[in-house]
Length: 447
Image (tube, rainbow, N blue to C red):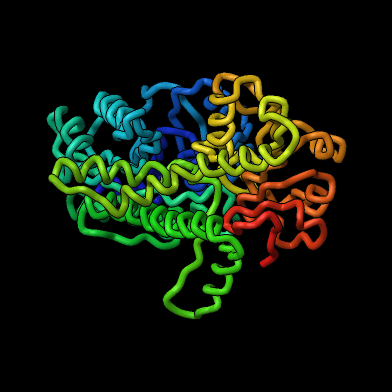
């Protein structure tokens, strides 16, 4: 048993988490709850100050638990990498966006690796969790760390273990969602698995980091492709008329085998599902391979906000007002229900498209989780949802189906409602006001 194994099993290992966002902060809190001294590192002075005051900013983290572990001295945050030599296990949980040309941007990973290398020592374990393309761990991170003269598998240990965070999910959380881990060497895998097992109930080992990296892409591309399928079917149902795609999906879901329901919407949001297909598409080109199927699915999903814009213009054109004089209210700015996460929100994308073409448009939004957004440089604040507001606007667009919306109240007091999420499925009265994405008719349909 080496030194790191002993430290992990005795809870004397110091855990470091680089990047204190939706993945990193819940991870840091879980380790501190298990009694491990945990140090978070983030370049955001605001985040560091909040954590050190015991103040939470991530919806999936319990306010009282964060305050408790900070007060006990188990969790602290730093805005630099000075304490790397004191840390035993280092998790990298930094963003991996794409460029304007849809090419991977792993600069945050490379920057973290460079900073770690300055304090790298024997028996360090580095676990990359940021979603990325295969060979990032071995082809990019490993060379940076080995420039120190230390060798992976002998002096320090390196593995990839992808995050599986689902914002707002109350059932599957950091501690009970199984994770995959693949190390550069067998010993790397064993140690990375042992570290994860301290807070996670089930850890699945794979043969190397490339498998773990590709596995993560498969998870999200699987969803991207199936969502694209139902999005395209929704567009067809809209064109055909008389067919409600939501009813079609619910009917198909009665089959007990061979079918898994996915649902259409105004577009793909969040970090992974939108971005991951382009990471794989970019890498495939270096092997003279074109991911036709995957790329087409991503393109289909990215077209949905444009289609919702078309639905809005179509409905406004049937009134006696021009688009410039119309008042449009969006319900929901978050990318999914019951969360405050606006990353790549399709709701905001639709607003951007409208404001780009119709500068000065009377556009409003309400979101109980998101008090303020920025659209094309314009700052908007969530307006109070009242019957007066609903009656005053010309069109209501449901872009996020938050559970705490009273849809009977919304439909009753609105002139017209475009529902892109089937949020109004249980509304019985005034259904003639509802224009449902994927129904192909002016009247809404209940499922």
